[in-house]
Amino acid sequence: MTGGGALARVIRSTADRRAADEERCDLCAAPVAGEHRHVYDGERQEVLCACRPCALLFVRDEASEGHYRLVPERRLRLPPLDTAPLGVPVGLAFFVPHPDGTVTAHYPGPAGAVRWQVEASAWREVAAGCPLVESVTPDVEALLMNTARDARHHWIVPVDDCFRLVALVRREWRGLSGGTRVWPAVDGFFADLTSTGSTPWEPSGSDTRM
Image 1 (cartoon, rainbow, N blue to C red):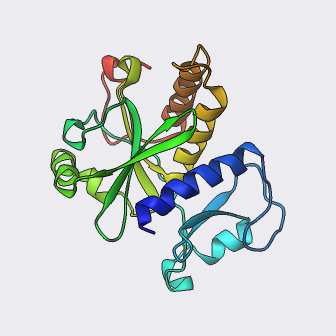
Image 2: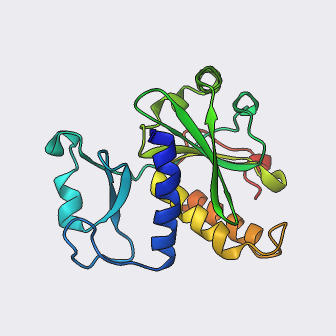
């Protein structure tokens, strides 16, 4: 299975586990706090919950020879990007690069995350317009965008943030178009990012509206 295909499976299973409020370390079965770190299992291509002692073991990638990698905590807001080259059919999506150079795009929906493959040349074109895009760490970080309903959000986030967004959309979606609950919940998600993340640029008033 390719990295992108595996990630789609992981997104579904991880979102289900988050919705069930599983609070055990996947490495040692010890209880974990509601706010805890995650590690990426490169062999199984899965994201795992980690208690603090287990997370500390993998602060350095070489500690496990690349088998387990600690998911970063960086949340960096980017200036509005021209993502048209990526062929995004919706306003809410995230993009995960992989070590082999491929990039998979995902957009949350009522059944989970729909996935498609991004052309490598298109990813390079977007990165040329914003060099920070090249810093997205393969497998464990994502480029997250929200341009729905006049929003202008582009972020580099940990992949577990994307799992939380997928679970939120699944939980709040109603009917064919999403209903009245899903978009206020998405707005709240990005408001939380704005309050806790960092930005290397000064947004104008029009760039901060939700």
